[in-house]
Image 1 (cartoon, rainbow, N blue to C red):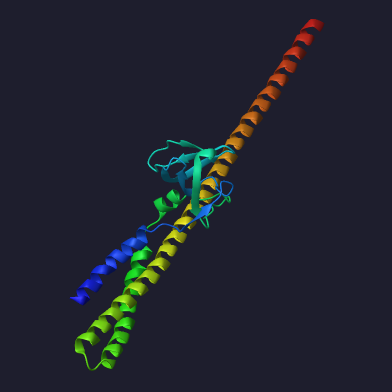
Image 2: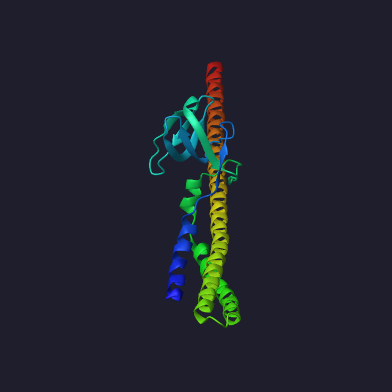
Length: 232
């Protein structure tokens, strides 16, 4: 029974890590940055989490719904508190990467892999320690088994939690790198398109220049013929 309860907890631990959000700290209005995910509490008691899309000295333009581009104006003098992340991820141009953008590109592949691997390893180690404790309690079988399974449960849960955090960090890093690589790729494509555009413009200018030279030569030729006819 205890064993079944132990393994039924593992998927919950994994899902909690996968759905977990970054730790927030209280920040000042000056520390709030565009594209940062923050939680704002107003003086009227309303609380909302969203992305800062624009920041002015007197107000913030907030996007509270990731599925809608609607912006909400929050006046600075109406803000009671702001909480944001301690550290931010940055894109290839040094701008803050939106957490919503990271989440959109992030998978939970490594969370599950690390969690399952960590659970197996932690279970083996903690179960071994639990059996040693069980053997040490010779006078009470039930007490010994309870201590054994408690040690196994705690050790497996803690181990799974630690490995899951590493997996989540790995998934986040991969997503950030993919976004940066995609931005660099798009930037290169824009540069190539601009080069091609400039090349076409240059070709058109050369063509116009050639046509003008040709027209001037024709005009000179016609003028020369006209002058020769006058002399006759």
